[in-house]
Amino acid sequence: RWVLEKITGIAISRRIPQIARQSFMKWAIKQRITRPNRGAGRKVLYLVDHYANWHNPLVGMALVHVLQHQKVEVYVPTWQTVTWMTKIAHGDIDRVRKLIGPQIRLLADAVRQGYTIVTTEPTAALCLQREYPQLIDHEDAKTVAAHTQEAGMYLWDMHKRNELELDLKPLNVSVIYHTPCHLRALEPDHTGMQLLQLIPGLSLHHADAGCSGMAGTYGMKRKTYRTSLRVGWGLISTMQTTTAQIGSTECTSCKLQMEQGVDKPTIHPIALLAYAYGKLPEVRTWIQTRHEGLTVQ
Picture 1 (cartoon, rainbow, N blue to C red):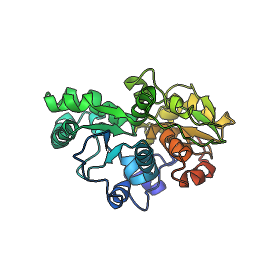
Picture 2: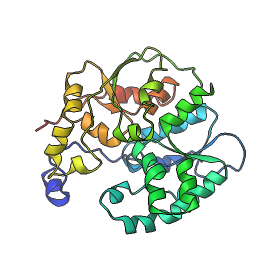
Picture 3: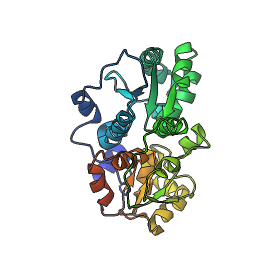
Picture 4: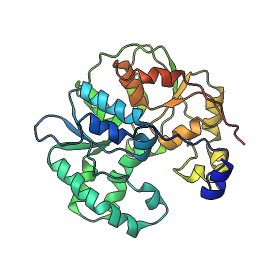
């Protein structure tokens, strides 16, 4: 950690995610879901963020299992890249325009083939819906923006149309949920709590403790680590005092802050939903995992 801080500037006290033994993309290739389907019906193109691909493939696997349980065709293109939101936040706009141009064209082509673009990371959905049309004045960017949804919102819309399977098994676990700022910006009337409330037996609480203070990589840096903690102290202290067994949120940055200084895990709502559908038994181990809580200082 000392060497990492000196070389990269990542704060020595910041908990950082491990790299998975197998990326989500490699798993998707083995599942043969990396080619488009020309048929009709409900079809989703899953745009995988960096965290779900390299650090926690269970999030991506969970979404695939949940969508397939709803008889939704899932397509995970190997040509996709990250959304470059970090570069946008740092003002590297000219570089981003060059990077996203080819991807926007390919995503727009997929939309014209009947796909809805779905992400498990709210920031990625926000980027495609709000940032890309601002950066590139082209019909393809508008098409992509109009057909992109955050995963939980996509499933909730299915539920409102009475299309979501409700054969969910009871989960006897207490959960405290945090609504990410970017999800509030996308869908003010939607939170992951709405999906989690569909799971029988789940004891659910809303953190309602303000912003996590992470702001992407801001909370990772040595220079801004303490400021990040001060901004997110309401959420951090809530996680330290809650009697809930686990936390839950859609945002990776928020998850890192929620796990800072506590030994309990924070799990994506889609992963809990998948487990309740009888998929991904690994989630049970994830729920029960306890790690050494890094001191918040």
